[in-house]
Image (cartoon, rainbow, N blue to C red):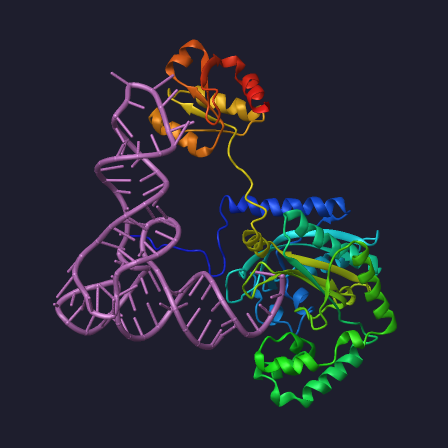
Length: 421
RNA sequence: GUGGCUGUAGCUCAGUUAGGUAGAGCACCGCGUUGUGGUCGCGGCGGUCGCGGGUUCAAAUCCCGUCAGCCACCCCA
């Protein structure tokens, strides 16, 4: 009886070598950039109390329709995090750090029960930063600039930065009223879907891509025309900062982000190298009311999340950020069995070399093929003659040095010399 | 969640139109050197044709269902 075969769940995949090394390298680049900019690392749990996310978006699909949630063995309502900002703010409120602004970076998997597609997975990975405790527009600039520099560091060139301000409580209500009135007047001309959206969150009608909505959206009142003096100045200061850094951006007055908590500065990074609908490689914004809604003191905050999986797809299209090399520096061939090869390989690794070896006592020809495929530049051959003489043969696999037999005790220094040259 | 396209060896795919009982290239293994890779030659392993059911003397091929991937919508990273 054959046992049933299993496969990974829908929308979830095994990232295998060398893609996995590449993904980790992306995170390493980000960690370095964020660390040098004064951001500490936060590793928060993948599971949170369901309430953490219910607070952040009653009209967002991410929270209302796509969340993996369940009751655990104690009967507690648990969610697998669909995003990380809410977790970070929960951690901020819980630990109440006193040295503000609190700047952290993070990385890790998130879960959304969506219909999968290239660049859209049910388990996906993001890197991001959050800053809590300051509403200085220069914080906005720093955050956005860090995202921009990150794409640059990966070699991405086909990224555009879209900027908008969603206003705050001083001006958004007036705008919402104007927008709602405008849309209600044209309600029956809107798509069915948009009519539903209109009832829940009029702002979101603006990012409909349905044809029948486009004419109405094009004429709709814009938030940027309703910004209060203070909010308008804040936005202008952010823009001036980006200009001072020569970071190109585009004002996108209909940019509305999916999470409800955004206020004032919002932005999105879109890849023009990605031809499918999933072309957003990052996004973020301010959420000045979120800490309070999670039980903390009123605290301004801003951050972004960048999609690692989509970034790598964009890198494939742009031909940038290749997989890191994983080849060993030296391969050990074992023609004699016994313990000589395991000891030699262990010593090489202890000495700091990337060292691998062959197994299974196959023919020398077969072992040479394995060594060749490994791309190791040097091969060490442990054969009967060598063993008897206390020697090892070193062979050049890529250059024209051929092979020579050296004393067993000289292997480490000899390899250092050859790899150093 | 809605609609559409696709699913044959580890990988990329042909074969599906006109049902007759499975192929190529690459990869892998072995031989050509009784201790030597990359090129070349020869040989070989490998598939319940996504899965389940139906029609038929006969199904990779036709029908139904189901699962998965992809595309658009939606959503968003």
